[in-house]
Length: 140
Image (cartoon, rainbow, N blue to C red; front, side):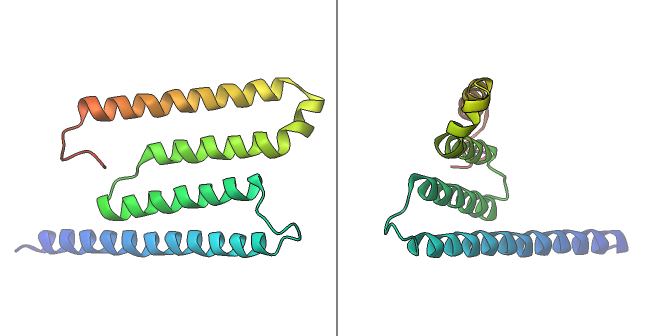
């Protein structure tokens, strides 16, 4: 075994350690943020979670699922990022859009078109994954 081979092995090991540590840090941060937000939700005077709170918890769930899939497969599921973006825009529309539309109705159209483009992108990704990937390459 040459020096170059040993250096390559060390580099591969360091990259793998960085990935694992990074995933644990990101995953821990997501769990910590989700639990913190859940505790805040439980302290509401109303006694129940609002739609805004539930949609935020869905965003945390999708982020956690994305980290879990990346941890198991070493592949980043881009479609999860699209789902997170759709959920975030939907949350914004449900919660804050009323005040925003009062000043400019064009904002509603921008949000709807954004969701439409993201949905088409997710469909295209799923179609291309089903059509062009082999069984070994599929995430699911």
